[in-house]
Structures are given as structure tokens and as C-alpha cells.
Image 1: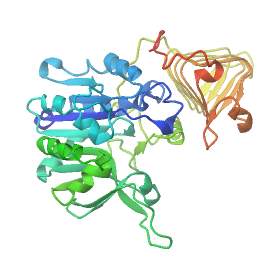
Image 2: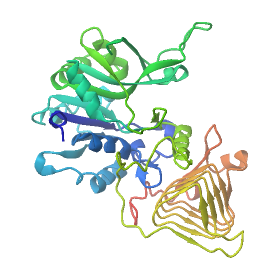
Image 3: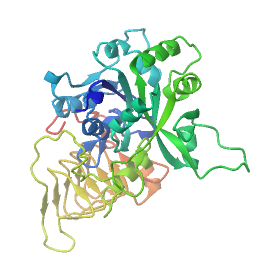
Image 4: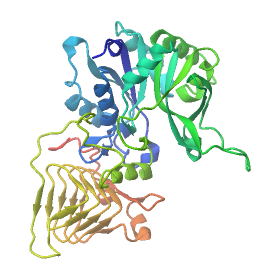
Length: 423
């Protein structure tokens, strides 16, 4: 591990409500939502940390965090070397400074200054988000931060201008100095010229440790602040300190840079469906920048029956995880998480099946996300009649059907499947 990374503490923000991803966040935090079959969203950022040499990480949780806590405990705490003062540690809200839960991203870090100050020999703090999909070497960003003698450095990426109302937008000069910063700016007036692309914040920040403590203390005393890094902290620092942008270098090694906020059903679905393409934009199979996760011991995936064209266990252009059994059904352009069973004469198309889902015989499923532990009865038809689907399930504006265990049995509220073989 680089000596510079040894002097850096990572703060991974994983406590958001995830309202736009409902009902997948009904019982779990957004970073704990399954992704790509055997992963969870948070695994991507944590893998960036490990691959970058960032081995001291606090994960700040808040809402519905049980499954996230268990996932980190089972799969991540032993990745680092504790005897070398490395750690990946989950910190729930402790109310050290008052009776409020976290009121914003900056407030979440401020409420944990006690823990941050307790980490010895730390000069820098890197603030990260637990719900973005991208590959980034944080060492590159820290090295630039030091080389430019910056007070604050912000990860930056070029995005289409029409996305500017959803993110932080900055103006940057040729030396990477940030001249202005606006969080989710209003659209330009009608008829006004607008650029094709804008420089956007990735929600990745590097602070000098003592400056971070100072500005968070100041922000906590401001009654009109929303206590958010993008809305409040960063804009106030632009004229007072040396704030630079670090232009994103994508470790994904594709022609186009890949950074995605999977905060909506549509974005989450698109990110997963990309993975089953012949040449996906996001590469899960790169051994030079691996994505790690926790996986219990599963039996191999199994495909059975090839008696007729109608009863043939087959999966095409799909990701099939361990423990899955495709028993005489046909799966196309879909992602099957561990422990899924697709029974005879079924058709599953362009769908995401979470762990321990079972599809009853003679069912037809299209463009659906089926949550953990759902057992669809025989003859289910989903994704073909939006009006009928809305009577029983959550249907996004784009027509994607999301099925929760409560939709089939309201009394069977088991949360995130925390009991059973596959936690």
C-alpha cells in the first residue's frame, strides 16, 4: 500500500433512504441492493478502495442497514490486515452531538468527527458515495491533490448538459482550479445557448483532515444550511481555499467513461441489463481491477431437461449465479442471482431475479425485477399488460415491473431475507 494511502481515511456514505429506488429499498439500504447477480451496489466502491490501496474505511450507515451490516461483516472486514492498522468498519448513527439523525451528507461526517479524529497519522480524508457504479483509482486523485497543494479536490467527469439538473456542476480552468460550483442548477432560460457537455461532480472529495473538521464545525453552526457537501460546503470553499477538480481516469478501460448513479429503477435496470450485452460497458471480468463481494458456498448452476423445444433448460445472453436451477425453462437477456429456480415451460426475458426467487411452471416474465424470496405461482404472466400489472405490483413509469414478497403475501414481511441459507 502506498505511504500516501496509509495517511488517508475513506468515509463511505451509505445511509441514504433511496426513495427513488423503492420498492427495492423497502427493507434495505440502497448500497445493499443486489447488482449483477452476486454483488451488491456497495461492492463497487469498496472494490475501488481495495484496488486503490485505500485500506482504512469508515462506512456510515443509517436507514434499514441490517443487511448492509451483515454483508460488510461477512465479506469485507477480513479483506484488510488489522495488525497493520487497516480496517473496514461500519459506524451507525451514534447521536454524539445531538438528538438528530443525519441531516445531510456533511452532517453525517460531522457527527462522526470524534471517530475520524481518533484515527492516528491521517492527513487526508476521502469522502465517497456507496451507490455509484464506476472504476476509479483513488490514488491518482490523492496524488494530484498533493502535487497541486490543494485544500480540497473533487472528482470530475464530463456528462451531457441535460443531466446537469441532477448533479453538481462546476467551471474549471486549465490548471484544474474550480471557479464555480452549483448543485443541481436550474435549466438555462429558453433560447439561451447551452453547452453539449458540462463538468460534473462525481461525489468524490479529498479534504485535508484539519480543514475538513474546521469547515464542518462552521457548517454545523449555520441554521440555514442543509448540511450537504454539494449544496453548502463546496460552494462556500471555492473563493476561500484552493479547490481543484480531478478529471476522472476510468479504470474500466472502455472507449467511453463509465460512471452511473443507479438511484432510480430505470437507471438500476439499465445498468444491470448492460452486463448481459456481448460487449458490456461495465466490465465485471477484468482481473486487473476485480470487483469483490461476499459469496456463501453455493452448488454450481444447473440446467436440466432438453426433451422438447418447449421443455428445455436453457439460458442465453444471461448471467446465471451459483445455486441456480433452470429446470425446463428458457431464460434470455436476464440476470439470475444465487439460489434462483426457473421451473418447466417458463419464459424469462430481460428480467432481474434476486436471490431465492422461484418462478412457477408455465409462467411468462418480461422486463421485471423480482425481489428476494418471491415465489411466483404457476401460470404467472408479468410484463405484458401494464394495466393488469399495476393492480398487483409496482410498475415504474418506463413499464418495468417490480415485484416484492408483500405483493404476493402482505403478511409475509420478511425484509431482506435475513434468515435462511442465503443471507
